[in-house]
Length: 495
Image (tube, rainbow, N blue to C red; front, side):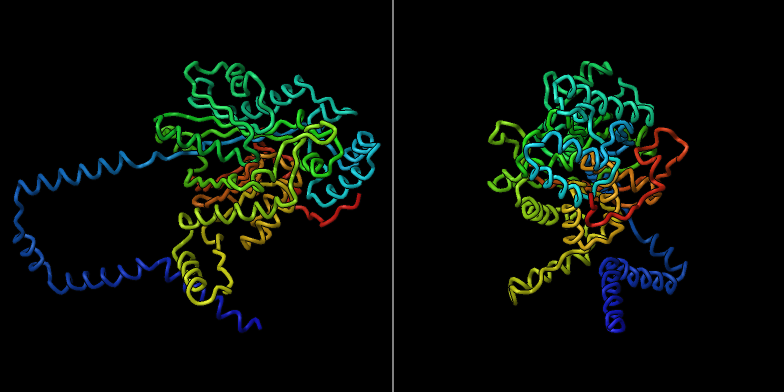
């Protein structure tokens, strides 16, 4: 059997090489023929042919003016390049860690009248893919939890200010250098806003353009990137600071409804601060990545999709997030819509032709033909899949036909930090960098899902080979543990 499969593999590789380099194969014979003709003519005949050409001065001036005009229009209408200068992720202190034993002990004490709900949480935790080092904020460590407004503000200040301080240290950024501020936090939206809190803390300029996004779920980080991109297109010579986080304290569910207990098992502390810039001269050379595409898909017109992640009260009046049993099915449909849009933007011609031929064949000849799933490994070297849970990563690995190494960053992020909501993509990117795998020219695909229901994608191209200094104290959340990863994550961890 291997002898039969081997030729098919090489046939596909040959097909991909031929289609992806078709222009080279067409131009090369033309250039060879032209060079052969020039060699046949000889220098005297070439010189005589050049002398016989007469240029009309008016035509020359008009042609030159037209070329300059077209070139000017082209460069003025060309979108500005958006650079990711650097980013930083929050690393909780060890005192915030919640091992499985601690989590289950608190569950038994908080839900002592509902042993079935405790058993349900234990089964979820056993299969969650989380490790023993994930963290929850101090208010959740109390028995019972004390989710006060002061505690929530305290968590927000801790994770946001720590992350921004780290980013400023890495990039030598001064508060006066920030032109645009975007903060996304889905479930905690106080007054004044979190963006106003940052303006007050760092004494940002009075003319700063600040935005605060809430209620947009775990994919809000890429929505913030899209908003920053649009703003940087119309504001030249500017820098945008994005802060992505989710505040856990006020959103810890204290009831016993199973569908609403799931977030308690999966969500953990986290935050990321990202610096984007369109300053070509000052930031292009030192930036890590260049933004290539952002594609957003919203399935909110469908009632099931709209309500599959829904904040509500349980019969006892306790507020929590209800995760529908149809969540994975809806996420799959949203992903299909998203990759249908992003595919033509990133896939090589060979994959697009195979997809087109299969589509035509199913429409005209046989609808039962198996649909062709494009090989996105031809378009990207790295994948950052939102670490929403083991089921999310498994489903995307299966649908996109990815290897274990392609989803390693997502699985290890889920294991070490849990589901940190919109910031999880940046922990995953940090993992790839910490492993020394990010090389100049590599392409990264970030995929995130969020309530509503949304599937958003961002494509980045690496500007320079990223080297992590293990001796640097602030070189990322993986700095002290990357040597231990990857780890084996069993299907079920017996508690």
